[in-house]
Length: 188
Figure (cartoon, helix red, strand yellow):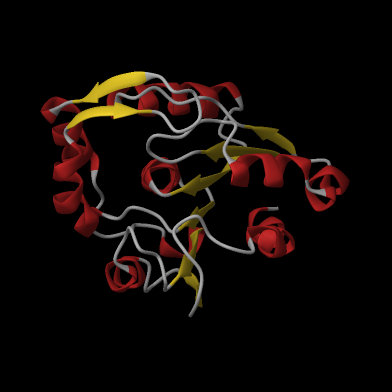
C-alpha cells in the first residue's frame, strides 16, 4: 500500500509530522510506502502534482494531509473515492480567513521567499468541496486548542465522516506520534 503525505501551507516534506510519520516503527512494520513530496506554492500546481502521483499509483493510494495539505487530501480523496486522514485541516469555511495570507511569505522549512497571490487564493475557492460525497472515506484528527483554524468549522465539515477530537493540543498536533497506529488502521 502507498500513502501520500501532504504538508501544509508554508511548510515542506521535511515537516516534523512528515518525518515522524515516515520514520515511525509502525509505518515501517506495515510495509507501506510513504511518498512525501514538496508541494508547489501554487495550489493549482500542487493539485496537478498530487493528481499525477495518484495516477502513477493507479489510484491505489491513501492520503494524509496536514492543514492546507488536508484540504488537498480531502479534495483528491473525495473526487477519486480514496481514503484520507486530515490533521487539523483547512476546510471551505476557513478560506475566508486565508484571504489575509495574500502577500509575501518565507517558507518555514526552506527559507524560500514567495508571494501567495489572489489568483492562488481564488483557485482554492474554485476547488472547495461544500459537502463530502464519500464522508466515510475521511478521518479528521482535530485538536481543539488549534490557534490557527476554527475547530467548530472543521468538525461541522467532517460531521458525517470519522472524527477524532482532543480537547488540548495545537495546530501542529501535539502527540501526533501516538495517533500513527490509529491512522494506519484507518488507511490500510
